[in-house]
Length: 204
Length: 191
Image 1 (tube, each protein chain N blue to C red):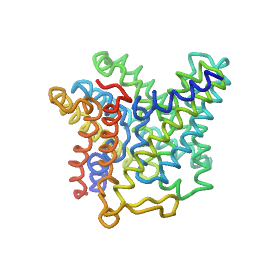
Image 2 (image 1 turned 135 degrees about the vertical axis):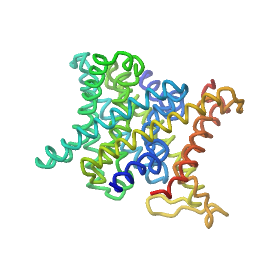
Image 3 (image 1 turned 60 degrees about the vertical axis):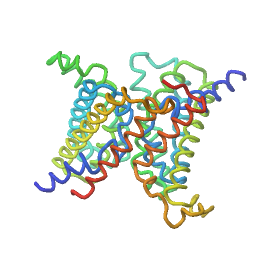
Image 4 (image 1 turned 90 degrees about the vertical axis):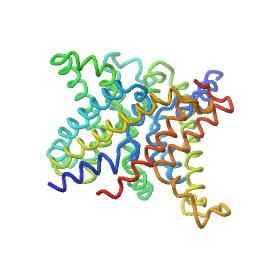
C-alpha cells in the first residue's frame, strides 16, 4: 500500500505535468478560458489516462517491445474516440466549446509518456495510482489557470450556468485580455515564476 | 484564387497555430533556444503538415464518408501520420543525408506534435476542398516556422538579459510569447 500512496502523490506536486514537467500544455492553455471548460477537459483527460494506464499495464507482458508505441497509440486513440462520442451524445454544449481539443488528447504527451514510462513497466494497482495522481495534478493546474483567467477576464465566477460571485470593481469593465490567447501565456508564465520563487520547483 | 490567398494568410498570421490555436507548444518552447534548430524544426513540421493534409483528406472523403465511419477519424489519422513520419524519415535518409542530419531527432518527434493532427481536423471541420486544405496546411506550417524563428531570435538575445531570478528560462519565454501574441493580434484586420 506504501507504493500506491507514493505513486499517487508524485504526480500532484513533485512531478506535476503542467508546472514542473511542462508537458501537455496545448489543452491547458487553449481551453482554460472558463471554469466549465477546465472541469470538462480535466474529467475527459483523467478518464482517458486512467483507462489507458489500466489497459496498458494489463497487457504489458504480451506486447512485443518493437511495436509497443503503435499499440499504445491505437489504444489511446480508441479511448479518446469513446470519450469524444460520449461527450457529443450526453453533454453537447461542453463538447462544442472544447471542440477539437478533445480528439487532440490522443497526441497529448502526458498520456503516451505515462504509458511508455510507467504503465508498461508496473503493476495495474501502481498504474492506477500513477494515473490518478498525474490526472489530479493536471486538473488542479488547469482549474487554477482557468480560475485566474475567468475571474480577471470576465470579472465574475460562473460554474455550469450558476452565478457564484462578482469581483468588486471588475464586473463592469473586466480585463478582457486574460480571455485572449495572450492572457494564457501571461498567467502560466507568472505562475511558473511564482512556484520557483516559493521554492516548489527548481530554477535554472 | 483570392479565396486561397485569404486562407493562406489567415492560417499563417491571423489564426497562427502557436499563438492563437495553441497547437505545437512543445516544440515551440522546447526547440526555440537556437536559431538553427528552430529553422530545422519549422521546415520539418511544414513538410509533415502538408503531406499529412494531402493524405488524410482523400482518406476521409473517399474512404471514411462512403462507409459511414467518420467516427474513426481520430484513430485512422494518427496511424496515418505516424506511418507517414516514418516513411518521410526513411526517404530523406536515403535521398538527402545532409538534410537528414540537420533535421535529426526532430522528425520522429513530430508524430506526437498536436499541430499536425490539429490541422487535419481543421481541414475536415472547415469543410475545405482538397486544394484549400493544402493551402491551409502550407499557411499553417509557414506561420509555425515564422513564429519559431522570431522566438528563437528573441531567446538568443534573452540569454544575455538579466530578468528576475525566478523568471529566468521558461517563465520569461512564456511572457515573451504573450508579447509576440499581442503583436500578431494586429494582423486580425487584414483578412
